[in-house]
Amino acid sequence: MASRSRGSSWVTVLLAAAFVAGITARPASAQLQFSSADGKQSFKIGILGQLQAEKIDNADLKEDTSNNLFLRRLRLLGNFKLSDDLTVYFDTDVPNLGKGNPDGTKNNADIFIQDFIVTYAFSKAFQLDGGMLLMAQSYNHNQSAATLMAVDFGPYTFIESVPTTSRTGRDYGVQARGYLGDDHLEYRAGVFQGLRGVNNTNSFRYAGRLAYYVFGPETTYFYRGTSLGKTQTLSIGGSFDRQQDYKSYGADLFWDQPVAGGDGLTVQADYQKVDGDVFIPALPKQTNTMIEVGYYLHAIHLQPYVQFARQDFDAVTRPDEKRTQGGLAYYFNGHNSNLKFAVTKIDKDGAKKRNQVQLQYQVFAF
Image 1 (spheres, rainbow, N blue to C red):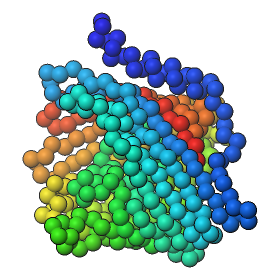
Image 2 (image 1 turned 45 degrees about the horizontal axis):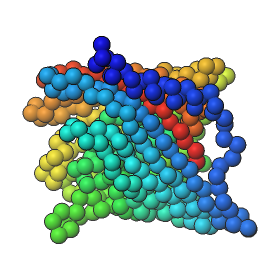
Image 3 (image 1 turned 180 degrees about the vertical axis):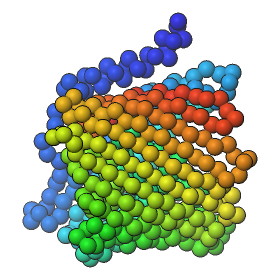
Image 4 (image 1 turned 90 degrees about the horizontal axis):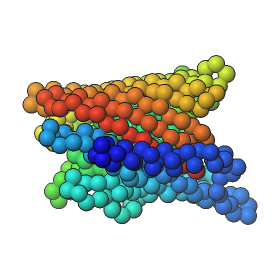
């Protein structure tokens, strides 16, 4: 009985904190923004914080479950408008701050730069982005963490990050980006550092993306998640990512549809073929898929959702894995303040089937 009490105490703590935040939450009346006297320059700042409780079965059959109460994300965000053509966006992060490590210690990592994007817009049809850029191998890969429908990104969305020495899907480089045909067609094409190799002799990494918006174009750097019944968007995209023998190709669909005078349906599907080949043997040939569907009920501010993800390896020596997550989000103040609860079934070939329970409270302002 005592063990069960300790395992469930984090739920009580986080629910209490979220309840107080929910009943006291008020919609933000304005952004925190500073502008020059002539209005030509401005600086906007914001914050994203996600307090998370987690309970997950350990992979070892002899062990019980791991319990954690930590900060999944803690980000400071800033955006400089230096002129009508030139903007600078940056954010910092400390992911999984305070989360327990297998050896019993806690993650007390320091804050670091997560994104740094300098954009010069010659026109809407031709813009140049440079810096530490979040790449767009799929729609989910390029989404803002603040507007995700599920409690987090797909489990295999950033599978290439560690083998390519990237930072959660980011790499250093420059890319051209633009919107054509009344913003219905988006293109991105860039060159990036990639895996440099001994003495930095490897060729650079090249990546690109095309997306067609049937309706509701998105013309910002980051893609959004669910709009909670406010915006109609349907996009179909494809991408590639190459460096020497490493290659990744993907296709995706995102549909966000207002329904019934305030409700909303959100659907996303991502498909990716990845192969590190002899260049990155730590990234074996595989096919990754992610599908999520959610329905927002505006009258009670609730959004139930389901997310299914699968990782299939070509080689039989690597066990395939699938994860099925069912969740419920309570948006008492939209994306600015909300509570998400999720249960995930983890099924890996040849291994113990495991369960993961997550409870996350988010505060966001930007």
